[in-house]
Amino acid sequence: MGRGEFYDVRLGNPFPVNDLRSEWYDWFLKKVDEYKPSQGSVTLWALGGSGFILRTKKSTIYIDPYLGGSVTSDGTAFLTHRMIPIPFNASDVRKIDAVAITHEDIDHMNEDFIFPVSRNTECSFVGPSSVADLLKSWGTPENRIVSLSENEETRIGDVRVIALDSNDPNPKTANTYIFDTGKIRVFHAGDSFFLDKFAGIGRKYDIDIAAISVGVNPPGAKWYNNPGDAVQIARDLNAKVLIPMHWDLWDVCLEDPYLVEQEARNRRTNVKVVVLRVGERFDYPSKRD
Image 1 (tube, helix red, strand yellow):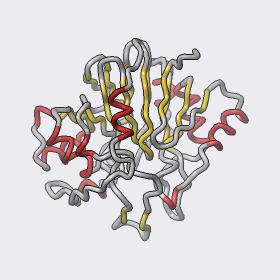
Image 2 (cartoon, one colour):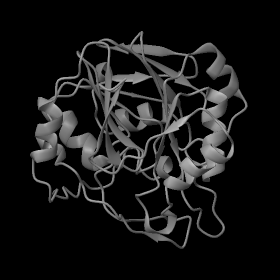
Image 3 (cartoon, helix red, strand yellow):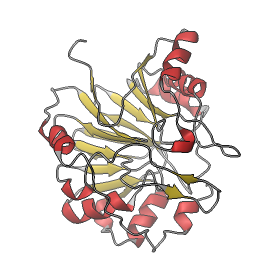
Image 4 (cartoon, helix red, strand yellow):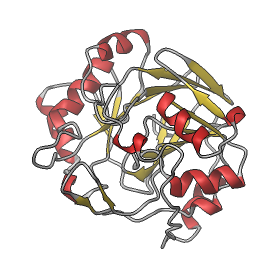
């Protein structure tokens, strides 16, 4: 169990919904909703930070979407400024089956997304116990909340969602996830650091894509992996593709994601590094493969 800074202050007392509006209007969300993934493939859109939209032929899952602005933390002296656009308005979301949340930190579980989407859709919310506690305390119907602990799983349409351990000391509880279509497996690390269990996960599951947080850690803090850490995690997971994430969100943590690609080359790994800016799409397997 971690520190849970954003758990204690928000239990039964959610932060106000700011309803920040996207300068992209609705064009990005229309592109996502109108896109038709091919049978047997997975499509990911980067939302910035650790956020993604994952779509298959039958399912649409939002992962750690953050639509909030800059944040100040009571436990630090930092005002962290959002450095990327908000790609869509949460009130416009309609095509969604589930939200998978790795942990309760505000840039992973965000009121600006949760409340409009809960009101306007019938999607389910998947997360560890601290996320489930917060959702219940905010009035989310219990039949829409799926609380998962390590090695527990649920099914969202044609996607099996498997919760695994996380090495993240900041939230009260945290998961990493595998999104398994039966043919393709996507691992999302949340904000987890290296964990010796990752090698076992790599042996048990044939990981195709691993999304791993990287960033420059501000003085006196350890929030994200450095590029070498990310490559080591991907290597242990035996992932074919590594997508660096979270490198773009906060001004105090901005990292060059191409350093991850350089590390992968220097270490002579077989992992392919794919850098996605906010709004960009990645199909796996690609139509060229």
